[in-house]
Length: 337
Image 1 (cartoon, rainbow, N blue to C red):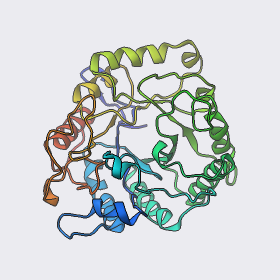
Image 2 (image 1 turned 45 degrees about the vertical axis):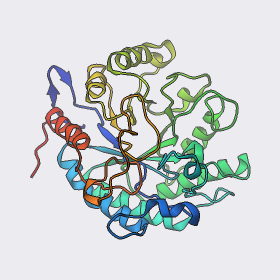
Image 3 (image 1 turned 45 degrees about the horizontal axis):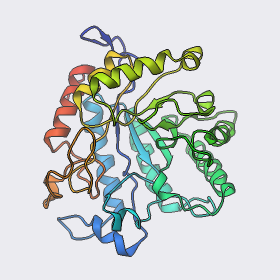
């Protein structure tokens, strides 16, 4: 049981899985034209192995503050939203036919091993909407089966699957109407009688889009990015009380929201696990709960903000990060050596 016996201001923390979106932990870019955007300010070069190594090195500090889960993406997330970059960089662990790229697997293996040693759960996110370069639906199905089989073969038990980041209504196989087909593949892929627990995260615009997806999820992952705290609380309560959701109660775990501590508290008030999401300045867009255009990307490595705009300083080195981890430590009662 997580956070055994822990309550905070009358709210039950026991059983929750408090987490952070660390989606770029195995990031790389195969496009030489955009790769230069990720150069570290202290070396002038991009280094995917350094990125993963420094993430793994930071895991014990996160765990000491009470963080029990991290989301890591096989296609990452928005590393930078300027169109000339966002439209062209290539960050994916999958070939067009759905087979897997070994360097990504090697980096993910390091993450899984480091996290497992600490008792930290890794939400492995398979697909990000902007990196869909598959040659066919058959290739997407193969990617799900291949990735799930590989994860089982690692032997690690600290894995939860987030199949697609933020499903929305639509008719393609990665949309809410058909993603149950892929969830079924992931659920049906076994090794020695064991399977992984699977889900798919939900776009914050609509927490219950059309489709049967929720019937195939072992846990549910609404996102909170688009709503401020009071509204987010109401949305979570409505989601929990939805007739179909309530008929088959499962853990609810938001694994992406924002830097907003009030939203963290709103999730706790609703009895829901919450995920910190810190994009970082210099990303090229503003978001509902933070204006990431307030200033340019920092020029010194020690000052780099966020956990998503690449390159990343994985330390707890900014006011946003310090505020979250301090609150997390308070809520969980964790001590830091």
